[in-house]
Amino acid sequence: MTDSRPVKSSETGFPPVRAVELFAVAISVLISDLTIFRGNGYFGLAVMFLALPILLALGSPQRNARPSLWVMAVLLAGVVARLAWCGSGWAVLVGFVCLVGYAMALVGLPPYMTRVLGFASHLIASGHRGLNQYVVQFMANNRWIPRKSQFLSIGFPLLALLVFGSLFVLANPDLVKVVGTQFEQLVNQMLGWLKNISLLEIPFCIATGWLVIGLLRPTYQEPDEWGPAPQSEALGPAPLFEAFRNTLVMVVGLFAAYLVFEFRTLWFREFPVGFHYSGYAHQGAAWLTVALGLATVLLSVIFQGQILNDPRLGRLKTLAWVWSAENFVLAIAVMHRLSIYVDFNGMTRMRMVGWLGIASVVVGFLLVVIKIAKGRDFRWLLRRELWTVSFAAYLYFILPVDRWITQYNVRQILAGHLAPSVQISEHPLSTEGYLELLPLLKCQDEIIRRGITAMLFERKAALSRDELRTSDWTARQIAEDQLDKQLLSIPEPLYNHTADFEAFQKYAYQWY
Image 1 (cartoon, one colour):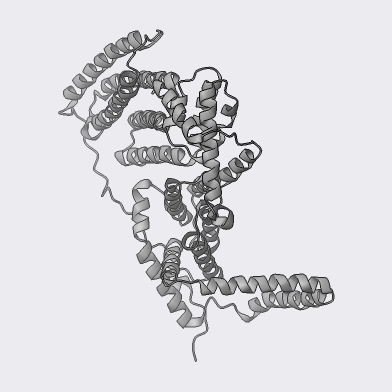
Image 2 (image 1 turned 90 degrees about the horizontal axis):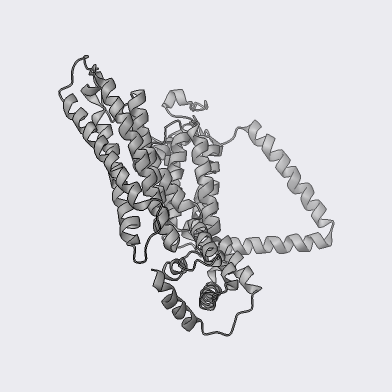
């Protein structure tokens, strides 16, 4: 006789397959098919990134969640909100990275950026092993088929619901008509869906199921990519101590002299007509940011290895603290330069990138200071530096950047400072940016007012031509619906929109 005992994880080395796991895989494939293969927009992808983490948590056979799981869940919630409101391709990419990090945290692996790619590259092999486990367990004892008692505990209530519910429906002719119509529509939709299956859809669903199984049953193990821990060096003078000490003395003096020059030339002064804003506030800020980055690298290089066992290390740290203080003052100077440019002619996406870049460099430098003070190793530093850069990228692609920069520029224009209008006329805007232009319909400057009116109603016409936006739920965007609704209440003026926008561009370019 065939052994009917369920296959246990201790006998195979793998967690047993449960019915809920198969359910999670099947629904994940269905949702991915509807939102990726058959979908036509970002709203569908928002639904997918909302559903998949729940299904992974439901079906995971080796759940060993880390606290970072909640962090990844919050980041995915940000992705969902971004895609539902006003999505972008970059937000989709961020969503997939966060989903891999979520799957790692779910099984107890820390989602370090150095390992996310490694985990993702194992998904094909993980899916293959998972499918093999499904087949082996099915052939052994049909483990995921519910036992009789389990089946009856679920089946009897459902059967009772179906029987008595059908009797109550049949007792009411109006309900019979409504339910019959709804059932007929459902059947027709299912038949239509089946008829529209393409040849590429079948391999897509197979590949999706394969990858989902790989996320649920990963083969990836944490490698010790750094090799064995180096043996601690004996206490003694380091050969490069004098070189490092002299270098720190030199940069401390150089930074002090430069900071005096910076404050004397760019702080507390009125800038004359013709001041080179681009050179000082744009290019200059970029070069100073590079200097901050190099300072971070240099400090990291100095405080490692044999130098940490030199009895004179305290002197080196004192110089490092002085230089660190100068670097933070330099960071303030860089931010001041950027603010000069923003005050001159408004905010842009690249200036937002600049703010985030400076913040990342400052956080990176702070991490180096912590590394020195706490005696952390290079692995600790690298992981947190990569997290810092990745989080800055996440913020840029997920937060409503266009909304914020347009709000700032609109406030400046309405206050009488018209220069930021060039950022509206010369740079592309997403729908969330267009929403913030509505107050400019009351701008006192006629050229700006008519130019903004032209932009808004041209955008409205483009939305009305997009038939998928109203016919396919996956293509909906909350920001587009809101803009369309608000513009419906505003009568469109009988102006030549093309001529008005060209006049606006020419007028605003004086502040470029």
